[in-house]
Length: 272
Ligand SMILES: NC(=O)c1ccc[n+]([C@@H]2O[C@H](COP(=O)([O-])OP(=O)(O)OC[C@H]3O[C@@H](n4cnc5c(N)ncnc54)[C@H](O)[C@@H]3O)[C@@H](O)[C@H]2O)c1
Image 1 (cartoon, rainbow, N blue to C red):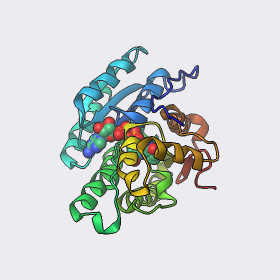
Image 2: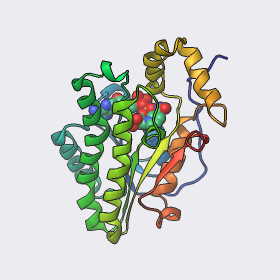
Image 3: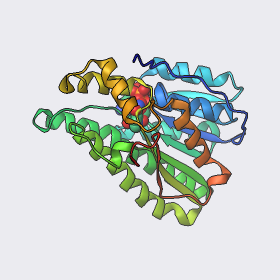
Image 4: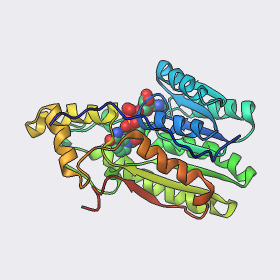
């Protein structure tokens, strides 16, 4: 079975976020890019934050097609000063933040004996500390507004684990714990905070995971990806827009009473 990693584009007829301001980290590629496009399609002004400036600008440009305001800001989410500077930029441009989608993340893996301390620390800095820094930066703004939605991208690996995913699983379980704690603190202000837990999704990240893990399992990259699709009850990988769809729902009026949850979009993987 040959598996295409080319994501399918999807346009929605919904338009729930006219005039709102949404910050998306990891916006240059994959799930973050799909989220930026989804919110732009639905009328939101979008601030795209990423370390990849070229990819980030391309996403902001693509969002502009929908007639919304966008900015592309350089951000390493593990750097406190980058996050603080960028959130201040968003505030000076629009004066409010209605939703944060914390999607920036990396994947590394390996057997326990192969994982260096540096590899462990770098992944946690980006996948967990980065989410903490972004949540902490937008919280006072949303508290003052007495409204807002924070959506942290965790993973099915935050709910279950496989061999060779030590630092990744730890970071994603950490995101779920952090999400619950922030949700408890911000609930009295009408702010919702949830984690989204994707299964294997057609992005560069899953390709990198395939390249790292396939040799250990005696498979080619294509075979590894096909195996992951076969493992899934729905027999396929997710499209990035399918993750973005849940993020948009969680930021919408229909989800005002949903907080502290970690919701899987995984075709039934964790359930099975
Ligand atoms: N693709 C999957 O199968 C899958 C499954 C579960 C969870 N996730 C999670 O979804 C999120 C998005 O991943 P993706 O699959 O779209 O991957 P991706 O590699 O396509 O995109 C990740 C984005 O994050 C950016 N990024 C990396 N380090 C950064 C940093 N320090 N600061 C700012 N930006 C940084 C990258 O430049 C890239 O644009 C990640 O948190 C990932 O762990 C992905």
